[in-house]
Image 1 (tube, helix red, strand yellow):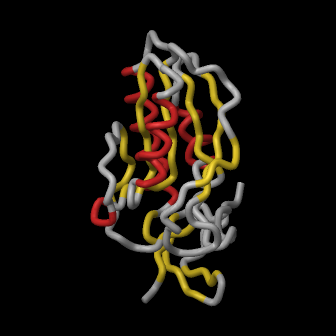
Image 2: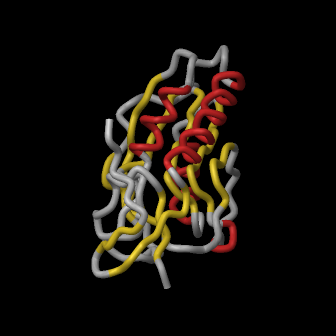
Length: 184
């Protein structure tokens, strides 16, 4: 299968270059999947993917999880079509599953300010899960303003605008198989 992974891409009039290759991403996701399988071996967790960005990460992560589990999705918006968060979080899709007493694993594409994840954690805790675990593909530690517990992080990155592997810029670029950074 051919993957969409050019060295340079142009999206919305801006140029991006490769930051993390497909191979680097897959290697790290495999490690996280192995760790989750070990850590939740007797718990049958439910993974909650945060749409739209986390769908590719979650799909690949599921291929490396070797224990019984379930998957559901929720959708938030805090960016719209912009490169920076609006500072407001809006629910666009609720979880369908009953998660009371369940081991919940929230799967996010990126945590930068922490606003959306803090909102999600607070919301999910009200549903009384047995446990709550956070997994993120990317964490921008320098941008974090709201501290949240992150249990599994694939990559810690500088405060750069990134694109690809599910991450978008005004809904474009999600289908890129690698992660790209904006060229300044």
